Every structure is written in C-alpha cells, then in structure tokens.
Image (cartoon, rainbow, N blue to C red; front, side):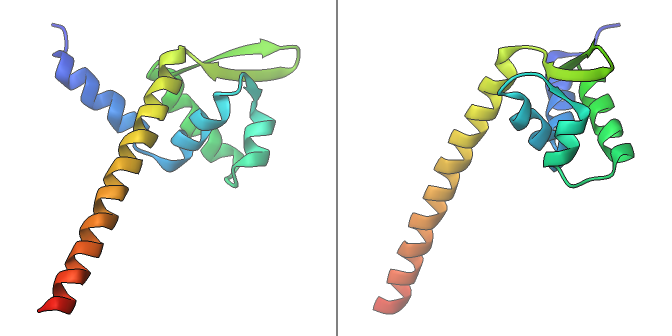
Length: 112
C-alpha cells in the first residue's frame, strides 16, 4: 500500500526540521563537499554528523559518492536548493509582517 502524498510531504518536512540538516543542505548548495569540510563548518561531533547525513541520505535529499578516500555529499536535485530559497523568502516575509505588526501595536499603545 502506498503512502498518501500529503504524508510523504509531511515526512520530507520532518526530515528538514533539524538545524544541522538545514545547515548541511545550505553548505551543499555550492557543490559536493567531503564530510571533513562539513565538520569544519558545523560544530558537532563526527558521530552526530554521520547520523544527520544518514537521515538526509535515507530521505533521498542528499546522495553520497566516493572520491578516492573521501566520502562526498551533494544535493540529490537542484530542487532542494529551490526549497531552501523558498524557505528564506517565506521567513523574510513572515518576519517583515511581524515587524510591521509590532510597530503597529506599539503605535496603538502610545496613542491610547
């Protein structure tokens, strides 16, 4: 029995719902990187990095390959970078709305 599309989408967003995973995906937008470079840019233990990469790999969001002795990771599709960009745009709009709402609330408080 197949999983409903909405459930598959929810699972994908659940996988994306971790700060280390998001940071890994942001770093991989520039191209493939070895684990050692990811570890140099993200302050976590190697075992934790391995776990987070495994989650992303199982979900099909990243793929790995060997380049000599190095294990390299890359985004599985450019659509992942598009999704991160959409997230930035949404967050920017949401935060802008909150700032304007906060200013409006402060202005009302002062005029009451």
